[in-house]
Image (cartoon, rainbow, N blue to C red; front, side, top):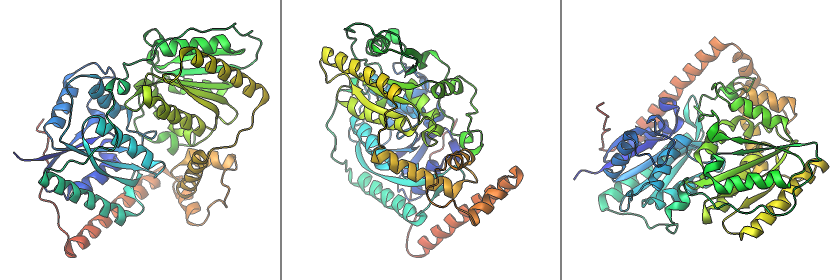
Length: 483
């Protein structure tokens, strides 16, 4: 039987996706027929237990393929939440085992924590039964596809394609790196247990406000409900709760307008901007999440994607907070670090990250009690805490990116200038000229179109040179959806 490669594309940007551009380059060198499926536009439901026709169609394509290549940008250090809907369903519903098949990944980002993101993808792939063959990490641009180290990126794509060709030809499936884990810990329907909130209630004599943001509806999530109750009980300050399942906050659409326009406002019309404004008004922030697909539940993940702008415009530097994760068993520590890194990325002083399942119920309740008291003290005393290396490194990556691309990343450039965050001389010369030219919208569009054309021609020239020097294209053909 003829073998087939399936590209599962996770970017809601569709044909404009930088990861898709990179994957299409790789596909030219496959010796087996291949198909591209846009999972982000498959209209999968948020309910992990629902086996709707769109999901069953994607799952059937996965089962009929011999290799699956995950294609995605780094949407808050993982796949977009629309691709996560697929993963959540595969881990929640019975009968999906891809043992004997191989998987690989194509990721585009700014090469910030790419290794960590790809490690998550390998873990998830192996938990589904795949043998993970390898991946490509490329610097992506919303206009031009993959950029920077382009010859190395293209060679990496060709190398991975050849590895896929050999594996399919020989029937080779790589050994697993991670031990198999009970799928309940990867499913968003597995919630942690509730617990008793002990001790006297704190006197409400504080003058601060703590905002708790959680994904699941509390009546359906005993662990999150108990955590929220405990924070109310133990804090001297006012506590507000945002339950995202009950609010209108959709996934990020990848338009980048929160960066491309100086105002830095998300253009999707729902409740996100209202919640973001409240995050800036309160004194303390707490994320309460449930594990799902190795990260957090889809309601919280969708919200985190929308906060992408403030994750590298640290506008919440005067805030304090912590994170709590439940429902994931041995996966909770990783999910807690994930949330902690995001909260710290806003500039918030994250005093700790808590997990529930490894602790005795009474010990966990006591630890949460002390943590809430510490949060109250931190807000009152304005604790000073040094940045961890990973956050400092992230800030420097974005500082350099904003310095180089300030003509496009207008909101970031304005924020960095106003807050004196360019701790190297602010770029001038060519960058200053580009910023001047890009102030005119019509001229900006023409310059971008010209740049896209030039990038495409450069790729064609490099490919022609590669072929002239003895390289070859693959024998595979794209399978087009007949619908």
